[in-house]
Image 1: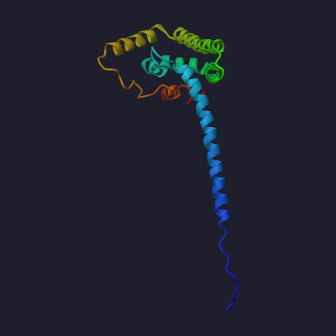
Image 2: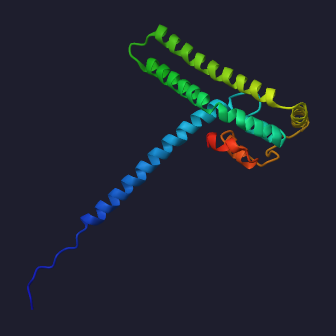
Image 3: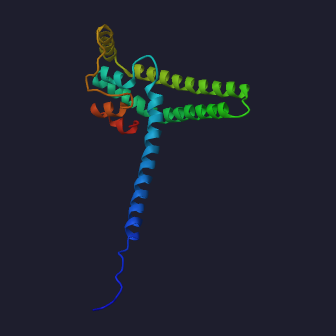
Length: 190
């Protein structure tokens, strides 16, 4: 019989491979998170806030020809909305930095707050310009159809949970545009 020492199996290779796989996975998650955040900024700037109808709801209420025109108008303005959305985020971050600073400087805080308001107003103006652009592209028949849809929605006792093309949320402008076959759908935030 041989008295050769038995070797313990190498476990470090298993942990090394596991660590490398985990690192690759985490890098993928971080990159996808950044892409999603970038798209949410643009979609948030496009989607609007309080009052009015969300763009995805408007798309569902327009006839297909009008919805295609709206998709094209929105796609043309994605870079503008992405920049404006980023400006809003940066203005709010700057405001919170001033808010947390010690000693507190009221004048700086008011200036930072005014900058946030200016950024929000710029987004509202871009939305107004987009609405005017879309309305200018619509034919009289498309505007009549939309008006009937709005009146029907207002006269309904219950809020519709689903549009003509399915249920969508505020960040699904691209999905609605894809559903109607808009060529510009891939240019919109997902």
